[in-house]
Image (cartoon, rainbow, N blue to C red; front, side):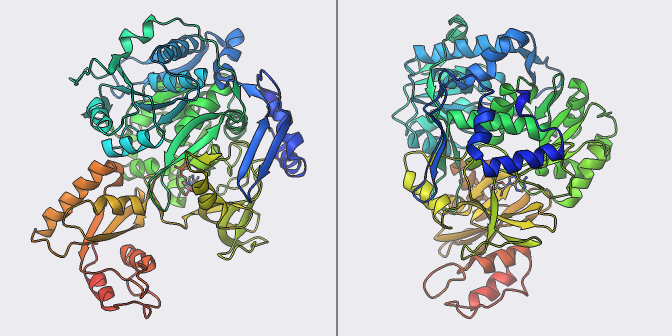
Length: 633
Ligand code: WTA
């Protein structure tokens, strides 16, 4: 593994130069560090014009053999995961690499028993328990494609995702805990399955012992099937470009799309970035607080760390239960050296005060990480001072579900930091800033739309079942470039700072949510005729959701209507998409051609009401006055 470790900034510069000048030689050398059944014929083959990309074509491998089996000779007794329960008095579960191997094989054999074959889709809807990791690796072991759905999504969202990829099996648990809440997940699955004909079986892990409906034709208890299986399961030989997983994510239009990642390139890139960004060393204890339902949980809880033989903490609970010191308590308890979380968590804990931090030593920490949204300078300094004690580099890692791994980030202890800057592209990543017409913005101290001009091994392969959508969304805005959807600054030293989305995607507490999705959920309310949703700056969440709603015929009290709308969004998407502010309006600012001028709605939501710009092209400029006057503060 260490053959591709970068140790100094000079080595970074050399690696970067080589990656641009000789990308095939560069990635080919890195790929030599893994176990392949057969090596590739060609390192990369690609076209952004008619989007198509292949990495390590002709090669075959199994990612789980690289994550687990390969380590067994030297690390069978080393710890892969330490699981920390939602409840602090509940004992940890400690899983060695050998145990991980056995559990993954048993789960894989159970899936086979249930009829799952190579290429079949398996939906995983589980809380943060080790079985979530076993399940994803079990799929990868037998060549099935996992599609994990964050267990906070509603039945409707779950059903949409299951249907889109025709999943054969759902793996869930009876319930989940989040702080002092207990949630009946199985009920959500039952409701979702009313509209999912493709699902043949539901594998149910008993976790909270909550009462559930059990359908004997379809449902199978995990404990009645998995432990009976053999602890050996030969890994399926996968082609490098075979699909490893699908993960749904929000875009600016329509329903969430299934981002598809392929086995070979994803393996090489997540391992390369894990090692280099975090500078993890033998004996370190790494903890990423994400949920496996998001891409961070895929790449930097499961695959990246396991590929590098790391020891990780996985945590079931929330940062504020039983109190806002929980993260720091866990760090001391397990002597965590690498801590990777989201700015929204940092801001929320900062707001609750240092009394929750001061009881803890935090002296095991070496590296801090940030992911999911821009980290503002204040939060950066708070994190640096109070958690890192000014001794731990902060790696502000910029990337996306579509990129599979981190693209722009400091290398811990190597890259000179600058608060709120993701700093420099990793080797292999060629960022470019363009203006709205697609012209390159050259030089430094500039700002533009962030694109990438050369593929990297874990780039999105397609959107499941709809390659045209993938081309349209990422490769058609600017000629021959991958468009990220993010705005970005480049400072005088060539450092990058991501300023946030420039499309209609919001980032709420680090979660991606499309304005169109929330609007369509709001419009499901019988009294609502039309709605428009925008993000606005929010102290803790980064962005909050502001909804303008037209409900002309309602006789309901607005407070009641607003409550009902929130409940509707909760039901259709899930609590993460609940609007923070709802303003009932009689009209929306539209141009004569019927297009909503979101710029105006954003300005009002931000409170910048005296600076709305030109409104002369509006069909009815009077609505603007009404909207300004009724602004929800
Ligand atoms: C945002 C999460 C600033 C960005 C890994 C991106 C960030 C979107 C950062 C992807 C960061 C992620 N600084 N912004 N360090 N990391 N983002 O797909 O807008 O859930 O486009 O992937 O999050 O979100 P996603």
